[in-house]
Image 1 (tube, rainbow, N blue to C red):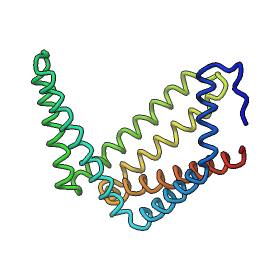
Image 2 (image 1 turned 120 degrees about the vertical axis):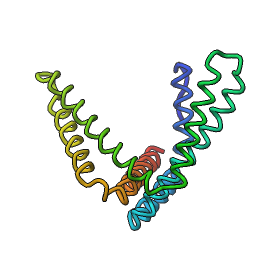
Image 3 (image 1 turned 90 degrees about the horizontal axis):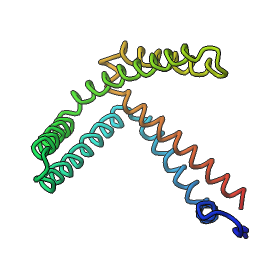
Length: 192
């Protein structure tokens, strides 16, 4: 039993949540195992995983567009009503295009991913050079360098890698999330 006397309210709430989570450690492990299995399943067919990722993005954009258009009509007395509605319409058009032509969407999204990955790596490199002399700046430099190299590899492999790269990222993410959930569940079990 946890002693909560003399604790602040947020601390008591956190302690209560952790006590509840410890009692459900098995669910964390089960969910983690499911994520790992799904990740390896996606890894076994990267093209299908890429298409699933594209459809997921497209459907989310369509749903978000519907909410934005509804929102526009709910605030039609506002000055930006037309822009809210137009933005929702364009978002719906983009989402529909993604769902109707996942191959082209995969090409575009992979190219955007490559460019943004390179840009992110370069920004971290610049930040690390500005922090040179500070403790740990080398880690930031290494992170930026690896990210920029990965982005460059994505860009050099484009357009061929657009058939599998997004699926690979989904697979890796699912496996890492699954491993983290398994680790968290086992840690919660051990602290019971």
